Amino acid sequence: MNPVTIVLLVILAVLIIAVVALYFFGKKAQKKQAEQQQQIEAYKQSVSMLIIDKKRMRLKDAGLPDIVMAQTPKLLRRAKLPIVKAKIGPQIMTLVCEDSIFDSVPVKKEVKATVSGIYITAVKGLHGNSLAKPVQKKKSWFKRQVEKLQEKAGAKPLK
Image (cartoon, rainbow, N blue to C red; front, side, top):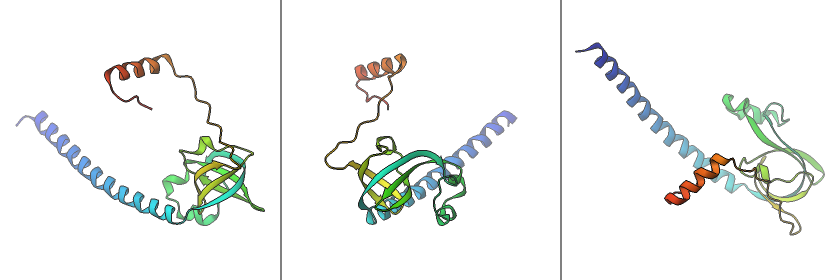
């Protein structure tokens, strides 16, 4: 047998094993995420709070309790998370915000938030005030052209 063929077969076998392993790890991670989401839903409560500050910062610089650092996986400790400092009643707390709503959280305004432990999952304006939508950046010429072509082709535009 040709040595090139042997090398290609070995590479193909390694790739197949890697894909199968990633498939099973992905299914396991999906189950774990669904379980965590159920737990967040079970403990959520509505709280009115005054947002003092919001930043993306590392977990160790955020000023969260030590037990949070102990329970966080090592890879996530160095990642920057959306952190919100808020006054809830007489107490000032540091909370972790969901990444999808972080841009819509207003600073120096009172809001009604859905909180699960130290995790903010939703934010609504207080006293009927609607939250201002974040200012969207102007799309580049290339992105506008791609969207036009996708619209003509009947495909959904990418976001």
